[in-house]
Length: 68
Length: 210
Image 1 (cartoon, rainbow over the protein chains, first blue to last red):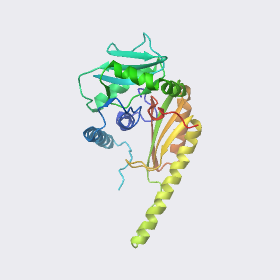
Image 2 (cartoon, rainbow over the protein chains, first blue to last red):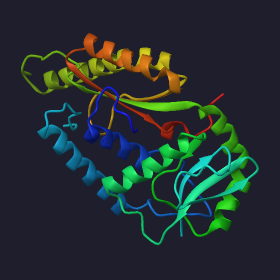
Image 3 (cartoon, each protein chain N blue to C red):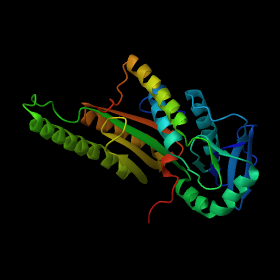
Image 4 (tube, one colour):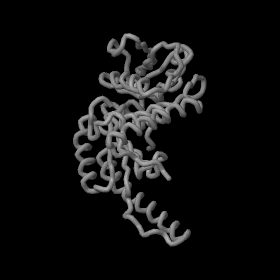
């Protein structure tokens, strides 16, 4: 997304960006090399997410609370 | 190796970056860049990938790839298009001219309850709170889904909140959708409703069930 919509916070957008790029999109299997199908990469992705959440909270942006 | 960005509905002279290349089979093209680097997951890398796909989306229908999709060489990409080009063409028909919007709903769906007097009381309250959260999530999702051509809804998001939804709508329907979101936010002031987009159709890259 390039344009600001209802919420202009780039950090909130990053949460949705991570969800889409790492969890959605076309997944190819078979005779193809997938470099994201490993734990390390998912871990790094979540760390990026956590830091974005921290930034958003510092700026007073309401975000989903983590489940108990 | 080759880093694949998207499957698009045509090839042509309109590739938005000098580093981009494409191969085409029939009417379907795969857009990629050559790279030696591993897929490094940083916010900057994700945004850069996203910008390439969005630039492509301005001139073509696109099916965005999951980040980090790598191929050995062009031959492997051609094999992919030969094997699945018909399927890709049908899915591209379904997303042409459409964009995806994301909606995330957080907050307290249920009214505060009295301090539980015991374990079973606690469980009863937890169940009631969950039911109420799902009721509210459906109440937010339903009018947005009616506005959209297709939608997905997660009523128990792994990252918390009560709803994570994705909505596919025509590019000229974004303003009306955003107005709906604002109306829902006013109707449910205890919730935090955020809407992001327009995105490429990440959540709608598979053939829709008939």
